Image 1 (tube, rainbow, N blue to C red):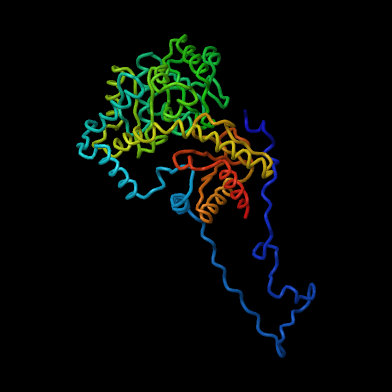
Image 2: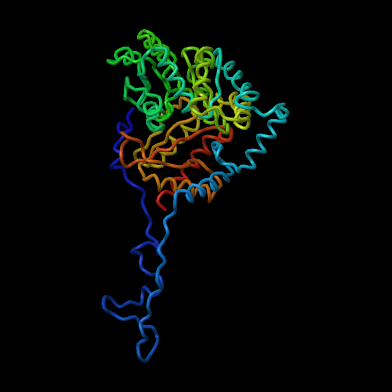
Amino acid sequence: MNPVEAGDPVNAPGPAKAVTADAPGAGDAEGAGDAEGAGGTVDTGRTGDAPDPVEPEPVEPVEPVDEQTARLRRARVWGGARRTLWRSPADGTVGERLRELADWAEESGHGGALPDTYGDALVETVERRVAEELGLPDAVFFPTGTMAQQVALRCWAGRTGSPVVALHPLAHPEVHEGGALAAVSGLRTVHPTDAPRLPTAEEVRDHPEPFGTLMLELPLRDAGFVLPTWEELTEVVEAARERDAVVHFDGARLWECTARFGRGLAEIAGLADSVYVSFYKSLGGLSGAALAGPGDVMEEARVWRHRYGGQVFQQYPAALSALRGLDVELPRLPAYAAHARVVAGAVREALAEAGTGWFRVHPEVPHTHQFQVWLPYAPDDLTAAALAQTEATGTALFRRWSAPGAGGPPGVAVTELTVAGPGLEWTAAEVREAVRDFLSRVGR
């Protein structure tokens, strides 16, 4: 559902702002009752000649806060929160992250492993593990997901003879990669739909232009981490096959899709010809990604990885953190997704009870452990309230808010909520209380 269908956010009331003695127009509290009307005098209790007028002290201009300073403040405040729904990989210090990783390496038996050199050792261990988890013949480690998908789509274009990729206009390559598919790989994109969901089988089947690859982002993050049903997904894949197109899954967050589909990772990945997965988005890794698929395609992918500059000398910290994520975080994701439904329901109830006017929790029942919240206020005001809440209470419920992307309604702000390990400790009542406290700080 389009956000504007839930109400009129443009005309929604903003926060009421109290007038205080410090606010413009409130007057000066000291001596305010001594004035005798316009043009009158103030009795100072002195006699004799009037004193010479006092020149006001010059006011120093307020320097604007640059984005780097603001980012450091956010990191300090939210990283130090005592209570939060999740811990961002960027929350901790370098020393904390490295110590955590080194401790896990010793506990898991990887501490004695040799560092990798140009993709061997621990990197190969990760590749084997990913192929096993996804039930696919082979996998290739990449430093970034952008590179992994560039390579995947380029390999398939060579095999199909078509440089055209069908994908959603909100998909990561279209929104977050600066037009890299065309600029770097010479590919062209088409859009079977622009609705805020993945395309249907009918839309894929009836698209008027030919394409060689259908790319599906699971879940579609910028539409609200939305997924089709399992039946819808299998029908879309079948429709692509009818057009002799290959299917590639942008599975940056594929790890968390099992609860929605009611299927294991291997069965989900088995629908596609190739799958990309990320190690830091859901699994808390430092960086890195993997591309999985048929052995011959993965061999070509290794060639292109080198050509694209991805044959990094050593990547063992990223590889080790990927293994930790697969061991520690992956088994917990179904529980995170289940509790996200509890949190989303409590947020929705609290917003309705508070009488905020128009708001949106999207999806109403989250498809994964992440979802969106929309409110009719300026993004900076909501971010300031979130920071103020954490500084005052040690609780980080919401974090940074932003204006909606292209096509979104004006006058509203959106944020993403992620429920991970720390969030499992929150009851619905505690979520509702945190929402009420947050709203009390908006517009202060």
